[in-house]
Length: 484
Image (cartoon, rainbow, N blue to C red; front, side):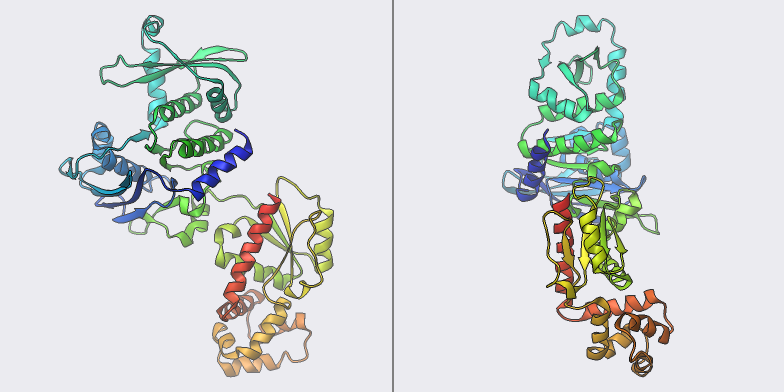
């Protein structure tokens, strides 16, 4: 798929989230290892992430059992894992809101018959190796295949599979074999690429996983709810990223809802915070969901955080520490992707913006000037973008003004009495504006970082500054997107 085509699919998921069949909320009680909770799904694609043993698989299988009890309970490990739990799903099915309740203790649905809903559960870690073993053990397979008419994939379908696997195929044939005791239909795949001819018996498990996922989704009806347990299993990081784009393609074209569990940075790279749910274990051993505010920290905890790829060049130390505090407070996920460097003045920022070649793939550079430079610095399409810190003066000047307009708040943030604060402040009179801040820190017996934290908290508490702070974050994101 072309990159523009992929971007269109992801935009469509965000702009048109409605689906004919949609799981709105899922609640569970007494689900072993998890704290009783309700999870709301806000997007057609949701990834459930967490460290190993945090309960991702249990939760996905609980959803599966609730939506498709008959299929799920054929598996002993599902019945065993969910024993004693009470589960409830609230769904919209073709415009009608329905609730399904399951009491796993009684091993039967306790409310409502199974709705008219297609549910597809996919776990490559189990089915890929099993599929290969099954066909390797069939004697006279060629004779068996003669009784079936293969599905010959068209050029577009072959191109899609090649996009995921990063291989060039000439032909792909799929035989849907239904001669098994448990009434399963299993795909047997024959492939011809630029060099070899081979089939399911000699494929890598990664290629089998890709073929299985493609086959399952090809057969899926419009409006299906797709539940996938770590669909990235066995495949390379590049293919994992492509697989996620393929899922977006199918999600849009077939109006499906998809819930996956994953450990893969590539699988969550394109997802917004509302599309990622994090499970973590509390001190008492039970697992629960992290709040949206913890998104950035959970990305780091699970090892899914994105590498630093945005560099902010600022004028001095005060601007650096202020910018870091501001971004960390308002958008921690963004904070994990940036580094802030003070370069000794606005002239150096301008020089960096002009000298470093624009359009680098590995990182972006943003020139971040103090607020007093708004009328003196202009943006240029030929150089790295320009943004400004909140306010109309340098950071130290803004803080100095706060000592005059909000001395009580400033003293409170410093954990000092007003009298002690005024005494410390008096010792800084006559100091240069840039030296003043460090002098005040010494007079208060604080480190530079402690003084900066208190000054920032005072600034942030003033009416109107929070709005300016939010605008600054949006400016950073907008400028970074321009350079991506």
